[in-house]
Image (cartoon, rainbow over the protein chains, first blue to last red):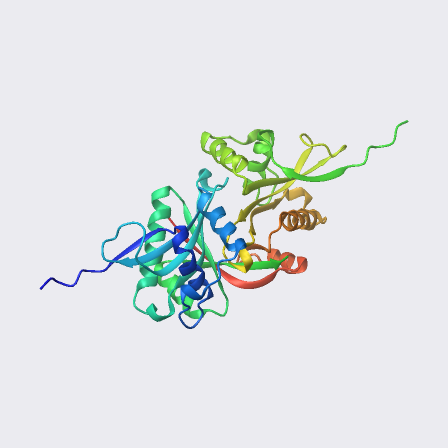
Length: 162
Length: 162
């Protein structure tokens, strides 16, 4: 009788095959959205290609599988990282994080912390001097989460719709 | 006796020749810094090249001169725009604005509004769906300025130093 294979969590750039699962996560507010029910429009295809081909953008997925190899597995979380060159602080890049999601039925178990810690480590390994993000002022739960990770709530975030 | 030539304000991507003036603006908190006194380190050269060569990053300068042609003139303001591809809102880009500066001796005369309005128009012309920025929580004057331009203070901005 063979042992149950251990599940491995991997953070890696999303492939085109992950796009329905990522769009499902982004549409997922309170309950799980089935990736098979997501319509991948041409606009989403183009946007995914733009992210995928840009050396300063990554759609990262947190994947649970039995071997930890690239490709395959179940997408349980995602975030987008943008690495921004700049003239501050000696010319280092900063990392902007957006679109942080953990699948609705997997929240509260520490996956969000793993997702963020690995993304921070990735930014550090790249040589970034700072990680920054914004969070809606009404999301006090998210604010506690980011503060618990060591983020400082130092700024106000402004938006202007076009 | 010829008439005094009218001054023209132009918003354009910075050239390498503008780099000392841009670094002077970024170092300028309360008083004007002389661009001739700025040391352009190799790190700043590399960072400027990274911005200049990236089709999704622009260091924009507001330049005052007598003819409005590209190159030359006096740099009186700057900002960096990053155009971020994404999977939200139908796949449109969003514009992130950072490093907004008006030269210390030219503040209070409406140049900041011109700088921002032209940057917003540039993002709109590119097809962005949103302009976003963050501002230090202690900068209430800046917050009034952004609110006056139509920005909504909807988010909190978090930072994590690496």
